[in-house]
Amino acid sequence: MWRVLLFGLLWWCTLAQAGAAAMTYVYPPPESGADRRMDYYWELMRAALQATEAQWGPFVLEPSGMVMNADRSQILLSKSEAITTLVRVTSRERETVMRPVRIPLDKGLTGYRLFLIRPQSQAALAQVRSLDGLRRFSIGQGSNWVDTKVLRAAGFTVETAPSYESLFLMLDAGRFELFSRGINEIAREYEDRRSTMAHIAIEEHLMLYYPLPRYFFFAPTREGERLAKRVQEGLERLMRNGQFERMYREFKRQILADLNLAGRRLFRLENPELPPQTPLYRPELWDTLASERQAQGAR
Image (tube, rainbow, N blue to C red; front, side, top):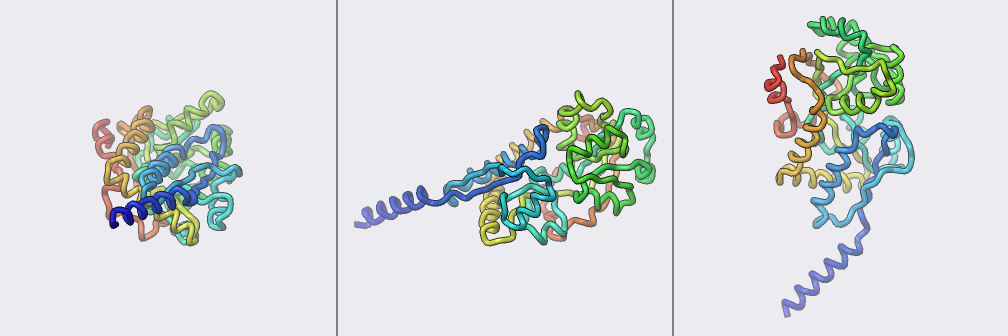
């Protein structure tokens, strides 16, 4: 008798899972055809969702059909409109209006910053030996990027624009001297635009660092909490079984392949926008680039 009951229970559970509504994750589409900054992050989310299918059931992960910039995507998410998740670097303000999953998706690589420049600026930048020297150069950033607040708090002159693509045009036109980019972004951005923008190059000698974790965010609602818990559980599972580290290492290998870190002068800044809940106490979540910089002889 107990076997019949057990079989019936298993059969019922199978039917219930098969009939369960898929959990839907809708994310912002790329801001332009050349914008591939987020590909790795959505691949990581897909892996986290696949790792939790047995417990949480089916899922849908897809881009929104609505074009939006980063500022608009945050507004839409906070209102649970058009999208259900996004990837952003964190800040105190963002964690009050959205629900973060506090696992740095790129292990903090976004906080290591190189510069896109106009080639004629390279000679002057090669002479920079201090933060005061670097502050003589104007920097371009997005209007509401966390980086803008960090750089201004550190005494830099920052020119802003609301559109990601317009910043490349402004640099090309000489509206500012440095376009600060994460080391996870800059090589691909340069390669995608070098044929159409003759006046950009990657600066050769300098690097900034400030802690700048990039998280998955969700709406501050009951459904947002449910979506976030599944992703957090999936990411923790990927870390335990080694898949997170394998995906991250392949991501890092690709982004660092064409970047020379040897001999770069590293300047560190504080991040006054960093929330107190940031998991700095978990060293396994962060990459210091120590082996890469030592292997290449960086100072």
